[in-house]
Image 1 (cartoon, rainbow, N blue to C red):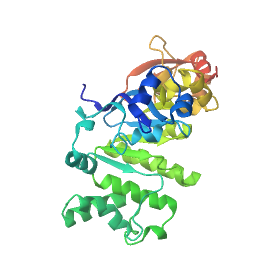
Image 2: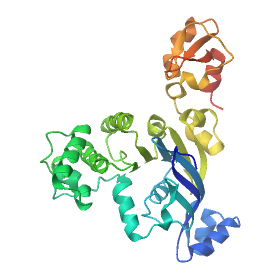
Image 3: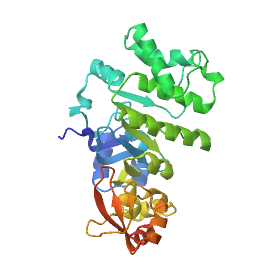
Image 4: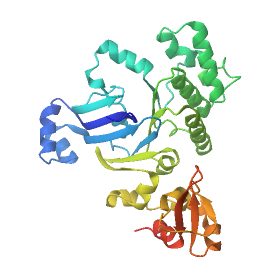
Length: 337
């Protein structure tokens, strides 16, 4: 196992019902989700999920309602136990943890931010953010310091003595984020954390999360049903359907190389020019005229391409040239299948 892998999921299956092992045998013999429910009364939650999440990345798991995305993320802290498979965190099989070790794992290694905030209504902002630390036995002065630090980080300074009912939805979610960050856990699980927010507030929270991640480099697992949100936040994206993994890749890979018809339909209406970067299409064998930054979105490079004689050079952040970007490659990337 390489050092940069934080979470490794191996062939995880989850079936809900009275006899999941017997139902799993039927699934492995070829029975589909609908037939399993109709014939046995069991619900297929996840089927043979394998993936790796790198240390310090934002890994987005997305899909429509019933795809299994929230079921999967709850396996990472064992709120849900799998029917079969293994889950490794830093090389340790978390399914082998006893009750005491699991409590410590949840308190110190992994935090969670919920869609509906899950704040304690009778406690202030500061008390909510401090709560996990106090439960873990951290001394009161250190708890206060760490809580205040995260309150500032999420932009809630001055609201420490307010109660959740006195805050907007966006502010309440900031409290939930601060509470999760205050424990200084390596892994942050976010289950549709911004889905209940208004569009403008949601965008503000997305940008704040990107800014926090740029500073802290946590391993974030983010659940969403919104493709635009996934493309904005995710270093890698996993797409689920009916409990099965359909594709894993970068945003550019999923947009330009969809694994199947389902993924292709999922991404059909996305503005590719806003997501695909110049660096992802740079051809090392091509030399261009003028240059653009590798991280620049294609839509911001149209002017440079128009002025170039066939191709424009693409420069990486370290100063090296990644290759040339051609108008032909851009048109091919932007064209839907």
